[in-house]
Length: 224
Image (cartoon, rainbow, N blue to C red; front, side, top):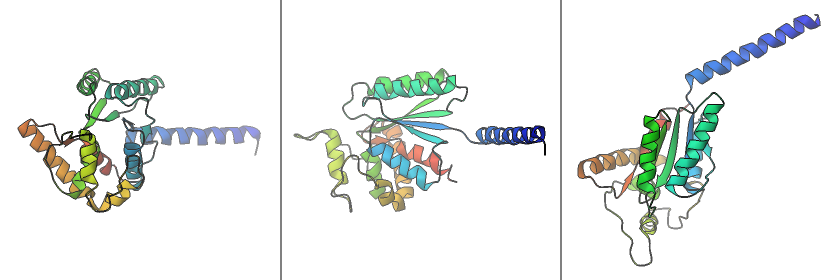
């Protein structure tokens, strides 16, 4: 076989591979998650996505670049625009952050809405007071609000409530294996989070609240 034939066959294989890649890209949307937390939330989502066999090329969890909601949104926008400049923008960018005691929470949420309206698909996935509300909902429904008391912040109060649950007495921020520990209760948590969202919509309450169940449900529908 001549070198010209080998060259043509190699080019044909490369062309076919490129076509497959383009086809897969057309069939699969790409998502980005940017979290306020540096460990707890990224660990949880990575373990969830691994369990659902969703590849990192489909859902990327980006490193944090600042712990306040406004920094989360600003960093997410930079990553989105960098990717868009390469010609293959993320279909949706999820900004995961807590209300807690952050003064930039409301402006960060509004910023995501403004960007989305401008065709830059950033979506706020928020929890009030904190992400641990989502974990609590694995153990049953609650709409009981949380408040700071003494030296404990509002977030500390949620963590204290979580520590009363079986297997969570030594829970700590940044802990790995949380998803696996709660996997059997995931469907209950999704149902409880949906009920809480409906309660908040009817009552106007924002404490407690979490959108994490909505994001988890999106990923569950993508399960391989």
